[in-house]
Length: 436
Image 1 (cartoon, rainbow, N blue to C red):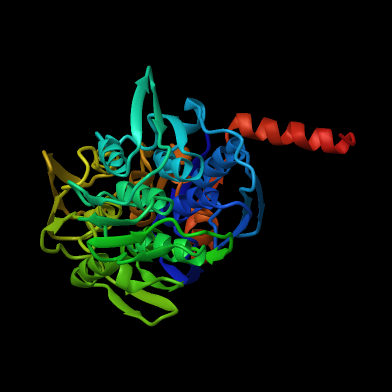
Image 2: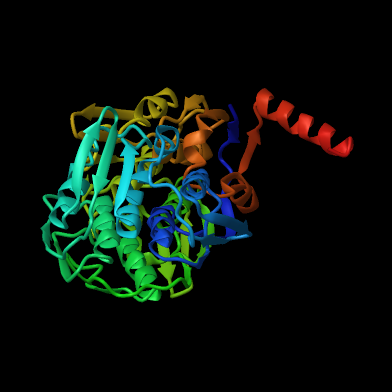
């Protein structure tokens, strides 16, 4: 497998553009199958999760093309309603095809989705919501069969403001007869982005960004064009990298409002942050200070996806900080690696006590999930000496051209290709040279 080699203690300076949001583009791409015709999705990030979504779309019968950051999905013909386990296991968000497939074809068969191992993430909220609309479910071994001759709008009360369950309900409700009201809905900006996409197709959806969403179903939808919002967690990652390594960086396209709790934490820790509608500017000169306890919570609270990344930044500062992880049970996968670098972190159930150490040392590190992997990069940028980070398959799920952007900002980071990949590239070059 590939690895990163990072030599720390290099300040970051310059500017970098924030690519499209992973957590926004995936439900939007699933939503393209709601209509016959070609949907054009702009600002589509070059991520392994997006590749996996494209493979599912092609399996279902769609024709997918991609140029630069624009993906075109022609969903005129849907020829398959079963997503095989091999495709479902590539990422958690594959479950979002459930609501969209049922809305388009009246049936769907899926297996349990994959993704990062962050603790129990059952799909019972998805199932419960779709049952309210009239979908029937039947378990067949490891598969779940779903059918609905006709869905009817209903009031859906979510037990927890689940982002995925909210998105699935929104996608399915577009074809339901009558009005659907989603109560205790997730409020994340990605939900607002999905609403914008659905409206661009002619759907009648209101309320995204609040805890109540109304969908007036049964309207004729049409294909169109839509541009995905910038990724707020990628924004938080670059901000944390600057905070840890010091320097001054402009984040083009970053939206401070969507990551306000992260910005407030970094300001309290000693960073200078300014923003306008087009960019965020962050400056860090000194080791970060400890801050008040950080509690992860559904939006607009502190995002669980940013917790590992901000923890790394504070772990290489001075002073103490307490983190309380309230969303996932296995969100501290980065801690053992940070300790290997000299970080002083004690975990007690949901709590993690961090005592800053500005003298972290490079080490052999392994990523076990997407955001935990990003956290290791942040720590390595601030550490003395060289760190080698493996498990890049997780990091590639959510970051486009990460090493190139960090190099441009002044970081000493390079990607080392695995022997298998080098051989594969060599074989491809030989084939091309032979005219194959």
